[in-house]
Image (tube, rainbow, N blue to C red; front, side, top):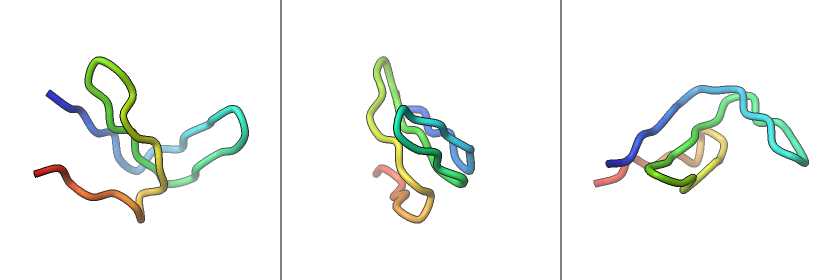
Length: 41
C-alpha cells in the first residue's frame, strides 16, 4: 500500500522543494513538486 504526503517542504541533499510530495511504500518511490503529482489509479 502506497502512502503520499502532499504539500510538504522537502529538503534533499542538493535542494529544497517548497510545496512537494513524497510517495512511498516500504521504500521511497517519488519526491517531486506538487505540480507534478498524479494520483495513482
